[in-house]
Length: 415
Ligand code: HAM
Image (cartoon, rainbow, N blue to C red; front, side, top):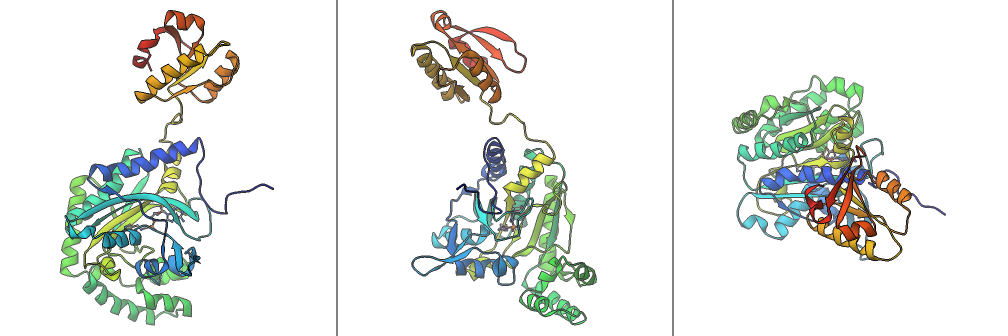
C-alpha cells in the first residue's frame, strides 16, 4: 500500500522548499524591520471564534471550514485565516493594555475546504500582519507599504494594488438603505437574497455573469462615505503617494470576510490566472469588541505564500541555486584522517555561515564529483594525504571548471 498527501494540500519538498523559505522570510522582513512582533498561534480554535469573527454570511464560514468535535465534545475548527486568532490572543493576554498600537506578524498554515486548483489549496500558507488600537491613517499606509515593499523586495513587478474604503458604520448604514432598495428591483433567488440579507455587500462578490451585470448598476459605498471616512481615506492615499506605493481605486472591491470597515485592499498578480489575489486586507474597527475585547480599531493583511511563489516563478525572479552548498568537500583514503579533516574544515566554515556539504561513504572521486555537481555546489575541494600534509587544496569553481591552489586556513576568504 502506498500513501499520497490529502487532496488539495500544498507541500514543499526540495528543491522548491528553499523557495518557500526564502519567500516566507522576505514577506516577513519589512514587518520585522518596522517593529512588528512575531506571534505563533494554534492552528485550531473554538469554532465560535471564526463564526463570530469571520462572519456568518461568508463562504468561509458557511462552506469551507474544517470543523470537528474533539474528544471532549468541543467544536474545533482548523483556522481558515489569522486575524480572528490574533484578536483572541491579544484580548486573552491583554496585549492591548500596554503601548498602542499592538503590531504583530505571523505565518503558518491555514485551512479552507475549497475546490482545489492552481493557486487554491485546502492547506495553504500565509504571512500576516495586524496593527491594533490606533485609527491614524498613517498606520493604514504603513501596513499597505509593508506588503508592497515585501513584493518589491522579492523582485515582483507584475502586480497591482486595488484600494477602496468600506467606510464607517454611518457610511455603511446610508449605503445599505439604497443598496437594499436596489435589490428590490432585482429578482434575486432565495439563496442570494439570504446572503444579501446577512451582508448586502456580499453580492458585489458574486461572479455569475448575470449578477455581475446586474450589480454594475448598484449604488457604490464610495459615494456614501461620511466626512470622517472620506478624510481618513484621502489621507491614506496621500501617505501612499508619498511612499511611492501605486494603487488603483476599485469601489467594487469586497473581501471574503464580514469584519472589514474603512480602508480595504487587495494585491493582484497579473501572471496567475483565476487565483490572482496574492494578498489582501483592511481595517476591522469593530472586530475586537465583537470578540469580547475593548472597542479598539485594527488593520492588517494576509499574503498567500503559495501564490507569491507562483507569482515569483512566473516572473522568474528567484535564483535557481538557492539550496546549493557553497562548498562540497570530498575526503579520500582508507583511514579516517581525511574524513576527520573534512569535518574540521566543514565545521569551521559552517560556523562562519557558509553552507558546506561533505561526501559521505567511501565513494570514488568520480561518483563524489557527480554528487557535487548534482547538489549544484559552487566550489569543490578534494582532501587526500597530499593535501593534508601540505595544508593546501585545489579549490575548483564548478561553473567554470577552473582550479586554484589555496591554503586550507585561507578557504574562508575564497568561498
Ligand atoms: P484572505 O484574502 O482570505 O485574507 O487571504 C489572504 C491571502 O491568502 C489571499 O490573498 C491569497 O493569496 C491567500 N489564500 C487565501 N485562500 C487561499 C487558498 N485556498 N489557497 C491558497 N492561497 C490562499 C485573510 O485571510 C485575512 N485574514 C487577511 C487580513 C488580515 N485582513 C486583515 N488582517
